[in-house]
Image (cartoon, rainbow, N blue to C red; front, side, top):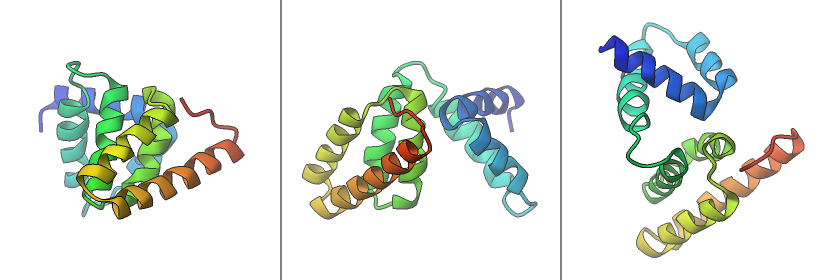
Amino acid sequence: MTQDRYDRGMQVRRRVLGDAHVDRAETAKTPLDQPFQELITEAAWGTVWASDRISLRERSMLTLALLAATGNFAEIPMHIRATARTGASQADVQEAFQHVAIYAGVPRANQALKLAKETYAEMAAKGEEPA
């Protein structure tokens, strides 16, 4: 593990997902998943998300589209919540899922939109502002 990359990853992870989410994940860590948590913090957050070549808004849209296109629906609500911090608007998310419908299939885009609608409704009920 590269400590600098890990530290940068933790900083970006907190910026995108919020302190409460990261604190819950850190508290729930066990010896079984600690190496995995370190890997994603360093590689995903400290390398990919930390790059300044594209904006956090664009990364958010890409991530949501990729999650939907590959059928990894469990992570979509977390990344919808993150849009409040990345600047990806509901219109941006809708556009990303339109691409999913055309290039990866209507059922996957439909499921992703269903999860997005549910998550935005939960956010509104809690008084959380989307982008």
